[in-house]
Image 1 (cartoon, rainbow, N blue to C red):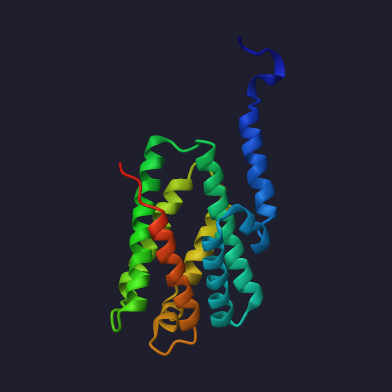
Image 2 (cartoon, rainbow, N blue to C red; image 1 turned 120 degrees about the vertical axis):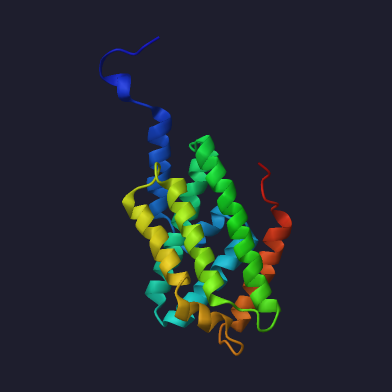
Length: 195
């Protein structure tokens, strides 16, 4: 039965989804983020924060880039949980997961196998992941969220940052080792989806 009057445009599911995204965009501290992710992912994010802070020498910038990363991850999770993605977008999401998993395995390899670091390969992989993420959320998130994606990828995809992290005598070696340990755990727990 069709609704009459001014209610025709109201959709409670859309309102709830917008409210969830808005509330979570205001609550993106690391402590709050830990309530939305498992311990291994939270530890990985904390170590990424430490590397970002130590590399940049700017606590505020490191916090901002990690908050932006958390906001994007949580918003995509909300969209996925609420079945907002089309079949084409789900295909993009699966491709992104596979590509990101390959990127994670590459990071592990660069850490564990001496003299394998290839900055250009990492830069290309990160650029491909960024582009896929933008395509995935194009119809769902605001320009501000797209800016957050760019901020995260600009920071972690900076050649000087990558060189500093992966150089043999890196001051970030300890944190990178902890990240690699967490990546091993996450890759063992999560198998890529089959399409």
